[in-house]
Image (cartoon, rainbow over all chains, first blue to last red):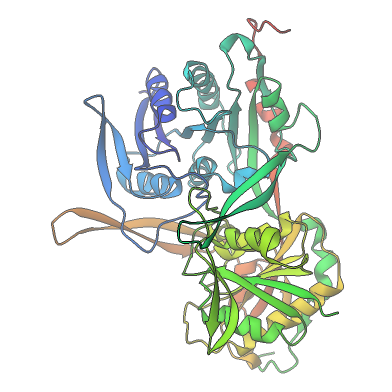
Length: 261
Length: 261
């Protein structure tokens, strides 16, 4: 039996990235696409709880392509895994996102959050992004590398608290130097807001920023991609700062008035 | 000079939680409130990039209370720190959220994301939540504990990659046993969707779930709160699974056709 792969994204079900990924993965797997009905970039790991979700069959070029959901990437993966899929999939993939997801910026990424959900359900998961926002980009190179990585992923067990974040350079096939296992780099955005006046002379603010890379090691996701390597980062949410628990011990106290001791 | 504290939340600027926190912290600090103009629960760490933000002075009981922003908690902290505040604050606090934020669920929390932003700007940050969704809850106890913790926080340096996630039991002052430094617990939601028909006989799905705690150690955030301790967890995003980099080495490859080697 072919492996079953759930595919989602945050650019929306109509994006070229998810279509290329779906076509490529169909060569080796049964695939089911469940993705947002519109662009959801920078929604982070958000959930829709205060309104109902709709699940609408979506056609591309006259053929059934997948299910469009009026929610976030995390919503899509949750409803797919709990409600829509006939069985537990062998893999959850998300992407291919238009725009790279590296360094601490992955905290804001809907693409990454879809893989986080898969991992939380105990399923191998991979987030794919390509380092360009151009929807006209040639996507064969990126989707071929995605296929290569998916094939490898299906051969091994992942640690159950870990998923992969993959970033692919937006260059020609010949220019890609290879695949590198990396860590989350130290790059960061220095944010600022552009202040403008609307036609009614009222202020509004538009988010903007400038990106800084703080070092130059090839082991970092940003730097690997910049040097034309496909970057594969094992991500884990180890959220407690164990080392520093002691530092905060001074916060501990007992309530002398407590009447149950 | 009094310390300057930025206050935000995800329940919205009109929630009782943020008002109690603001009133209490005013006793020891100059405060500035910048918070979402409406409820933003489960927005996770999302950013508004595709539309402009508005910053509107907000009054409560006839007095200026703070700035309402048509965005997420992360937006509020970003625009406050880059654009609105007269100087770098000594502390960023968020809350007091109605509803606890513990275990892996903090990934979905807007309250926590506000503190994450503060930390990313290099400022001591604390997220406060109380373990009840009742907006009529007596909030004196919670805000007194928040004040206590803020006073301690102002006395020490935080590691620059770490912020505090505080959860306060929704019980009477006398019933609280004290403050405990904890770690992120293993509790998790088993999600499901309730499927219903709308008045037009079309399906819709509503998110729901059941909560499981997988152990019973007082050192875990959930269990501490359940046992009437105020839980203080040092959170850090150590995102790379370093230990397992080796496991994925088999993914590495070189592109033989690469023409720049």
